[in-house]
Length: 366
Image (cartoon, rainbow, N blue to C red; front, side, top):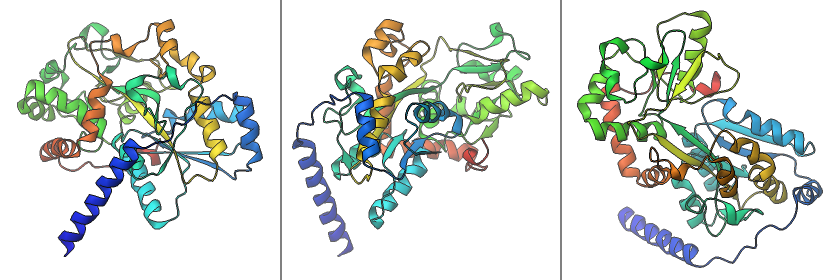
C-alpha cells in the first residue's frame, strides 16, 4: 500500500510538472522605474523583506545588503547567508508545515527552482531588462533569474611564500612533493560546487590523482571562503606554511598578499547563482524591488568592470563575456545539479577517501 501511495503521489507530481511547465500566463515585463516600485513597496508596509542567500561567509553578500539599504532605506532587509543546501531544506520544511517565511531565495542549488516551479511555489516576475539577461540562465516565464556569477578553480596563493611563476598551471602538478603541507582545500563531499570541480579533475586524471592529492597533508575545511580567509590570516601572522588553494574565491578586506592565477590548462567552475520570489510572499512589491534593483544597470554596471554579469549588453561593453571563455561553461554545473544521482555518487566517492566533512558551519565564524 505504501508503495502504491508513493507511485500515485509521484504520478500526481509529474502531472503537475507537465501542467505548470506547459501552461503559464504571459507575465509582462516590468515597466516601472526603481523609484516607482519603491513607492509601491513602501505602500504595502512590509514588516521585513526576507532573503535566503546561498553562501558560506557573510562577505559574499555584504555589499548587496549595504547597497540596497543605502538606496532604499525604508525597506527593512533581512538577508540571511547560509549553505544553499540548508536554506532549501528549511524552505521546504516551512512550505510543508504551512508557515513559509522567506520572500526570496538566491541559491547555488539550481535544481530547486525547477521543482519549486513545478509545485507552483514561485511568483513569476520579469524585471525591466529581462530580455537582456543571459538566455540560458533564466526561466522564460520569469520563474527564476540569474543574479551573480560565482566560480572556483582559480589558484589563490600567498605571494610572500610562493612566487607567481611557481604556481602550477594545472592540478596534476599539485602531486609534486613540494606542495605537501601547503594546501588548504574545501571538502568536496560537503558542497555541490566543489564536488563538481573535483569531479571534473578526477574524471580527467583518475581516482589515483585524488587519492594521491589526499596524501599531500592537505588541510581540509568546510566552506569555500574558508581557504581564502585562512591563507589571508596566515599571511598576516606567518603562522603556517599553508600557501595555496584552488577551492576558494576572493573576498574583499583581507591581506593583499593573497594573489590569484587561472590554471591555463584546466577547466574551472562557473555558475550563475539563481534567484526567485516565492508565491507565498507577503511583500510582493518589496520583493520585486529587490530583484529589479539587483538586476539593474545601476547596480550591475560597476560589477561588470571586474566580472561577468547576467546582463548581456554590460558584458559586451566590458569584454567580460564568460561565453567567449573556453576554460569554463556555466551550463555544465546546472546540468550536474539537476542529476542528483550523479551528484551524490561523486560526493560518496570523495567521502570514501576523506571521511565525513569535519568542522563547524563557517557562517557561524566568518
